[in-house]
Amino acid sequence: MKCHTDYLYFNTKKRHEFVNITDKVQEVIDSSGVQDGMALVSAMHITAGVYVNDAESGLIHDIESWLKEIAPTNKNYRHHMTGEDNGYAHLWNLIVGHQVTVPITKGTLDFGPWQQIYYAEFDGIRKKRVIVKVMGL
Ligand code: ZN
Image (cartoon, rainbow, N blue to C red; front, side):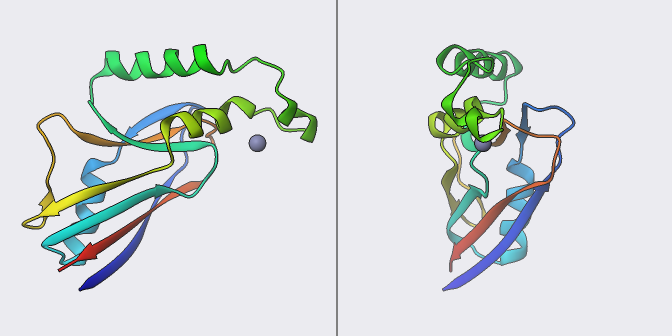
């Protein structure tokens, strides 16, 4: 049983950004040497998400619009009484989820044809990171 940990770093140019991290996660799997197992990919923040879905630009736009409908960015959240202005970003984190577990077979991500791993930044323009923990044989 091998266990390998690495981190991916982000400092997005925009406050909201959807970053395809599939290749970066595969690079971590490559350096782990794990052939059969799984990887945990987890945002180390409460205002970002990690999900698996299509890398289609229309869909990514739809996801952001959908999040804005459910939890608008301009709403006066109670969280803002702390002096912060990112109440929506915490809620988006809860909707999207902060981590995924992905399967590894023969040393590669064992995905369906359209599955990609995304880091979803909801309150960016600052340094953030994702932990990738690879476990297996
Ligand atoms: Zn906050």
